[in-house]
Length: 241
Ligand code: OAD
Image 1 (spheres, rainbow, N blue to C red):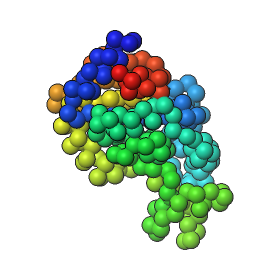
Image 2 (cartoon, helix red, strand yellow):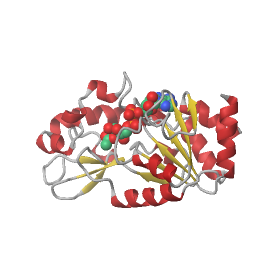
Image 3 (cartoon, rainbow, N blue to C red):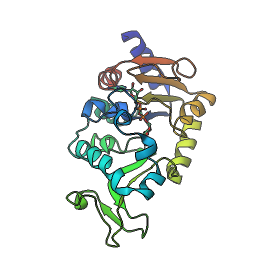
Image 4 (cartoon, rainbow, N blue to C red):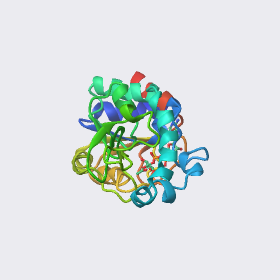
């Protein structure tokens, strides 16, 4: 493993533009379960019933049962060694931008400045009927949280069936096409279009460094260096190298 970490560190130090694509696995060590592991959120809640925009429109009260559980985990979560290590890589000039599928704000809290939130951020809520916006904090005691127009509010996260924020989509595409290295960390890379980012980067010549507890469909097809294990430990080792 040490040799692989050294090889990855060498790629990163030689790269003029390194990006990271992160997923839920990066926040597991902060106490937030991922989605598709045996103990993940989708083992408990069927995404077709709880995570589509149609499900929210049809039965927002039901969807808020899940959102409340998520909020309880997110509100006190602290950045872990993976978030902090990535912020250190940025500080060292070794990481240009993080594209994250996570909505927990932990990259920013860990010190990262350039973060593209591909699936939004759960710290604000919007009314999809009248457009008014609130902070999650100001509505935390209201269960489920309501807009002044009496409709239920929706967190500003991307549900299945909703578009990716257009700036996030375009900027990620452009960065991926010009990256020389991409760190893919803690994502199963099963959700589109975020999972096109490694393929785009690879097709333009970037080296792909994958950090994951388990192999993914990228590992044998796209990944150049697979660092298997917990993101906190591995990213700390990369920073040290
Ligand atoms: P997944 O749950 O699909 O994948 C998490 C990945 O992280 C898996 O490959 C795990 O093996 C790995 N993992 C778990 N713990 C880890 C650790 N400590 N260190 C390193 N790796 C670890 O989560 P995502 O790929 O982020 O979107 O899911 C993508 C999207 O699907 C989410 O943004 C969300 C979800 O549905 C929407 O809801 C639109």
